[in-house]
Image 1: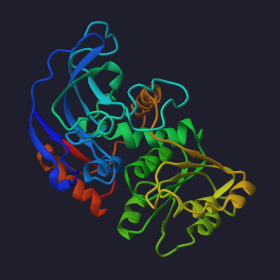
Image 2: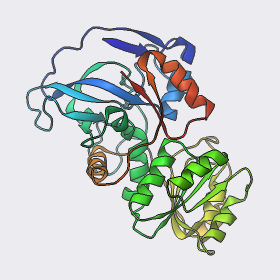
Image 3: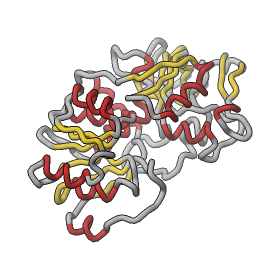
Length: 335
């Protein structure tokens, strides 16, 4: 079977596409899955580029979608022929977070899905949404579930709420789509007027170019008649968090899901306390939350926005496209 491994040292130029032995039949509690698609995330980019620590020879990619070919003894949740999608935290089934690192995350602490075949415990997968392509389903493991947890699980979003989504990466685009599907208003930001136009076409009520409007937090309050938004999907971290605190309403919710501007920085804690803001840091979600999301997506009227598809052989070019920042939505590998 075809497989990709991280080089030593890790870099896009050292990614190796090769062959590996067939993983064989599944044992008790395991499933054998033919992987057909994966999607790129910034966490994956950090691993394959060497910006985050990794093990030489590691198989990258946290997201994987495909078809169950066989199940082992005791597996009742899946059957041969089922379409499935991988889980980000395979050992976190339900409840409060039980892990604060990536030691069990495919593509990081354990081997991931840049390969054609895998045999893994059944907890490594859930069913994919009915009728979705493998490429569409592969966008859910990381980006889709992060947006779902930010808005639904932690945010308790309801119709009539207002959501502020920052940027046009995979999580932010999912947040726009999910919020609109659940009857919420959306304000979205980007530095690209072309992308802002697309966000408007997707249903964003207001869009802001954050380069043209550096104090966009005040502008968001103005657009909400001085109240502020109910939810912020915060992907920037220290560089954008002060503006997000300005933008959110008193008692509102900020989901901190990314730190694209750095790992630390100054935060206006007095203002945050005065506004009684609920700041909730999160990393993706658990397996039950993914199953809940899949059921919801089967009745929601949208599909993931896929910017571009690459072959597995072209994985380095796919990450270079992600690095360029030109994409809108998700980048996928199909094989």
